[in-house]
Image: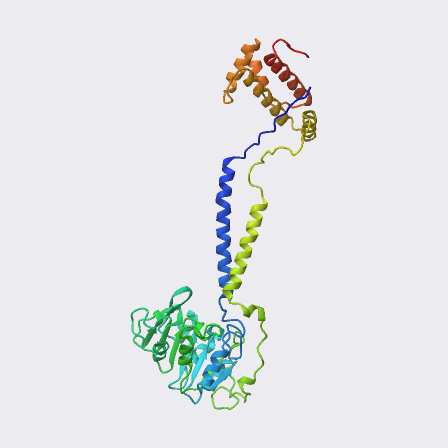
Length: 425
C-alpha cells in the first residue's frame, strides 16, 4: 500500500514582525542616508585650522594661490607672513591691508593688537569666531549660519550696500555666516554676510571663504569681490599661520626702544617651500561627484543586504522528481526523531487525521474543533471528551505517548472512513 503525505503547511510568522520590518528598514535607510549626508557635508566643508587653508602658496581647492596671482597681476604687493608679530610689523609705516584668513588660529593675546594698524589700513577677517569679535570690541555678533553658502546680491536684504567693492562685484558667494549689528559705523552687504566697520583701522568681516578659495574664485563675482577687498593702492600682508599661534613674547625688547623686535630679512614669498602634492584623481572630479559615488555605493550595499536576508515565511514548492510516499514519511520521521520534535510530529498526525475525518463527514474546513469532535464521537459511538482529547489534546512528552497517539488516530480514521473494517490493531 502506498501512503500519501501532504506537504507541510507553512507557519506564517506573526504579522507584527512584518510590520516592524516594513517600518524599521525604510527608517534605517533614511537615517543612514541623513548621517552619510551630514558626514560628507562636514568632510566637504573647508577647515580653517588645516595647514594650507587659503594660503597664497597652496594650489589645492582650499588654497589661495589663484587669488595671490590675480592680485599680483593687478600690481598689488603680496607679502606672506607666517607669524602674527611679523605680520603686524610688516604693515608699518602703512597704510596697508592685513588679510587674516584663519582668525581662529590667532592667539587670544594677539587679537587686540590687530586693530593697532597704521591709519588708513584695512583688516580683513574671514569667518572670525565670536570670542575674536568680542576681544576686538567690534559692534558685531554672529547671527544665523546657513547650511551652505548662498549666492546673493549686495542688496539682498533690501538695504543699500555702502561698500564700493561689493557693488562692483555684484552677485557673489558671501552669505553663509551672517552678522548682526545696529551701530551707525557699520555697513552691511549680502544680507549681513559682509560687514565693514569704519574705525581708525577699517575692519571688514566676511562670513564665507568661497570668494577667496581656488575652487570657487571663478564663480559669479567671487574674484572681483576678493580682489576688491584685498587690492587697491595699499600693499597686502597675508597672514598664513601654519597652526595655532603661540603666546607672543611682548617682554622682549632687544632694541631698547619699547617696540617689538624687528623681523629679520626674508626671501621672496614666491620662493617659499612648494605645497604638498595633491592626488590628481581626486582633483579630476568635483567634490559632489565623490559624495554621490559614496552614497550610491552605500545604497547598493544595503540593497544587497536586504535581498540576501529572507524576511518572509518558507514557501513550499513541488519536488522536481517523484518520491515514494513511504520514503518521504520515513525521512521526515527520522528528522522529527533526531530533533526530538514530538509536538510538531503530533500536530502533523492530527492535521492529517482531521482532514480525512472532515472529508468523510462532509464538514467544511472552518468547522470548530468541538463540533468536529462531537460529530466524530457520534459517528463511532465513542466518548466526545476522549475524541476531543485525541484530536486536540496536549503534546506527547515521550516516544511511547507519540506512538500511542499515532495508533489511536489511525484506528479512529479507519473506523470513520471504513466502518466495516473496524480496528485492525
